[in-house]
Amino acid sequence: MTPDVACLGRPFLDLVLTGLPHLPDPGSELSGDDLHVSAGGIANVAVGLSRLGLRTALLSPRGCDFLGREVARMLTVEGVEWIGPEQPRGAVTIALPIDGERTMLTFDPGNEAPGAAALASLHPRAVVGDHPWLTAPGARRYVGAGYEDAVAANGDVASVIGVGDTVIVNEVEAAILTGEADPGQACRALATAVPTAVVTLGGRGVVACERAELHACAAPAFAAVDTLGAGDLFIAAYIWADLCGLAMPERLQWAVLYASLSVRVATTVAGAARLQELLDEGAARGLTTPERGRSRLCPPEEGEKDGSRQAV
Image (cartoon, rainbow, N blue to C red; front, side, top):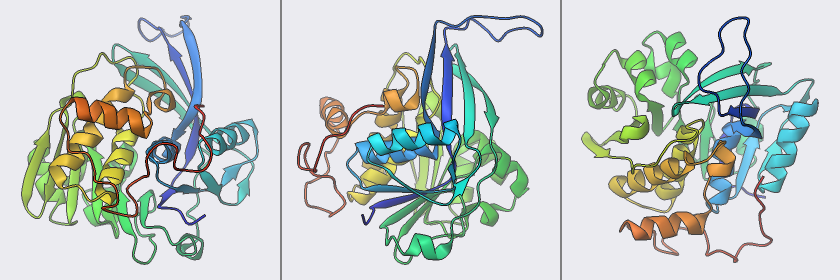
């Protein structure tokens, strides 16, 4: 398979315990109302891309334990090809959504960068995820920075952006990287080092700067059950809209809508809409629908791809 998008980074097995009124005090125990198991981390981006019709590969070491095998099964069901050497252990995150926010506990055995030759051999049209200095010839490069990466950068924005064409971070990460508390100013500062900068604002929407022009988009209001991974799905939909040739305002509208739809249910994978659902939701809101055939990467109509994908 020649992928439209190659994802770089660590996939996690997410365990999401819902229904907690608050975090337990030390030495106490609380019971939730349900436990949800899904793929997480960069797998969220990969699943979103695949459900939006883009051929997707994930490059990362593959855990041989139960955690890794279960994530591999979920990615296979979603049509995502996981490529990488085996390692003894997988990664896991325990997420506790409370009052529309979430607390996370994580074990990560580490994520070795894939070889440049392995990535180049896939000939992807786009690359997204970790390892900002790793790309493929001719591919668009989308990079981000987690909280720890932003802190470790110590103001060295170039170390985070690498060879990216677009950087996508949340407002906390943007403030750490640039020293600018205002998201718009932080976005402008990032855009001096990369052609396009995007700063997500959670339930308030997003701001972006491209060719010195600042754009903003509010998020539609949905009751939040679980916000975990909404930012990952924003990235997936932004890439989809970008590869379909949409202008920045339309890219942001579709990406914010896709992320907002996901918070209505527990787990990112359960909330990741399929293409037709997103198109229907967008049409109901008067969004500009990508023209079929404008780009080879604009996904086909439902049913045109071989086989059908099942929900995890």
